[in-house]
Length: 502
Ligand SMILES: Cc1ncc(COP(=O)(O)O)c(C=O)c1O
Image (cartoon, rainbow, N blue to C red; front, side, top):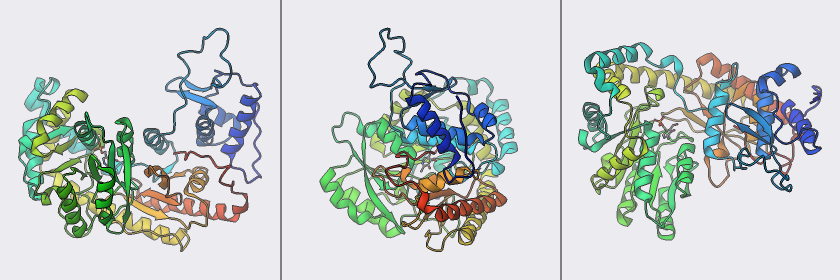
C-alpha cells in the first residue's frame, strides 16, 4: 500500500492520503474487505500526526469507500453497485451506507477531543480541572456506608425520593412550584428530552417538532430516532424568534416546541423575558406543549438569571428538563424531568421501559453530595472560572481573528458562536486546516437540519484551561490566515467534502 506525501504542496496531508487510498481502492489494488492499517501504525510509517490518517479514513468513509467496525478496524467497503459475488460470503458483514448523522458527529467530536495533543473547543464537556473528585468520593463513601446494599439493588423507577425532594427544593428556589413526587430522575438531561418525545409522539400522525435553528445536536438526533421532523425557527440576539411561531403552528400543527432558552447550545443566546412570555402565550393559545431544556440555567455569569418558562407557566404545559451534567459531573448521568401533572405517570412508565431506573449508587451519592452543602460553592467557582475563560476567548478572537468575524458575548453557558466572513473559507475548510495544527472546534452547520451556518464555529470556552484557550485560538487564527493566503487553492464547492468531518 504505497503512499507518498508531498509536503511542499497546498493540498492538506489527509487529502493526499485519502486520494491515494481512493485510487488504490478504485483500481482494485486494495480489494474489498481488505483491512487498512490502524491509524496509529500508518501515521508512524508516514511520519504524520495520527489525526491526519483518522481524517483521511473519515473522508473515505463519508464517500462509502471504507467502513469502520468498532473494535475491528477500517475495511475497504464492498461496492454495493457491483454484481454480487457468486458465493455471498460477505453478507452480514457489510455495514450499510448510512448518512452521517448527529450521533456520529457527537461521537467523532468526543473522540477527537480526546486525541493527545489536540486543543479542543469542540465538545460539550465541563472543565475536567473543576470536577469535584474528592467531594464526590466522600459522598459515594457516605452513601455506601449509610445505605449499603440498597444502592446495589433495584429501586423505584421514578428515582430515589430524597434526591427528588432535594431537586424539587432547588427548583422551588427558582419559583418552580413542584414537590419531590413531581420529579422524575433520568439518566442525564438527554434522557429527560428523550422520554418527553417518547410520550408526546406516541401514536401520533403529526410528526413535526419546532426547534431553534441552530439547535442542540443531541436533540436533532433524538428527533431522527423518533422519525420526527424538525421545523427550525431562527435565533437572534434575543433567542428564538417567537413572533414567527403562530404561523408555524397554524401551518404545521407541531406536536411540541423544544427550546434551550438560557445560554443556548450552540449560539450562547438567551431568550428575552418578553419572548418567554410571548412563547407561553402562543403555546397556551394553541395547546402546544413546550419542552424547556434548562441544562445550562445555573451557569449564569451576569446578575440574576431570567425566570424559567416552567416558573411562568400557568397552563401546565411545560416539560422542564435539567441535569447535573454541565454544572457538576456528566459521568454521574443524572438529570431530571418535571412534567405537567397530566403526563407524570406516563413519563415514569416511559423511563421504566427505557432503562428500568437510573443507577441508585449515583443517585444516593449525588444526594449525599447535595446534602453536604458543597454544591453552591462549586457553582460559584464554576461560574467565575467559566466567565474568565469566556473573556479570554473573546480577547483571543479579537487578537487572532479577522475584524469582520462577528459574535455575541454569551452571558452564561459554555459556548461562543463565531460567524466568519461569508466571503472567506468555510468553517469546514477551517476545521480541516485546524486539525493539522492540533486544534478542533464544532462546525456550525452540524447544528442545523436545514444546513446553513456554513461559516459559523461553535467554540467551547469552558473545557480548555486558560493557556490552551490562548494557544488554541492562536493556532486557529494562523490556520485561518494560511487558508486565506492560499484561498485560490481552496477546493471549489463541488470538490469539497459534502459531509463535515467532526
Ligand atoms: C442543550 C443540551 N441538552 C441536553 C444535554 C445532555 O446533557 P446530559 O449530559 O445531562 O444528558 C446537552 C449536552 O451537551 C445539551 O447541550
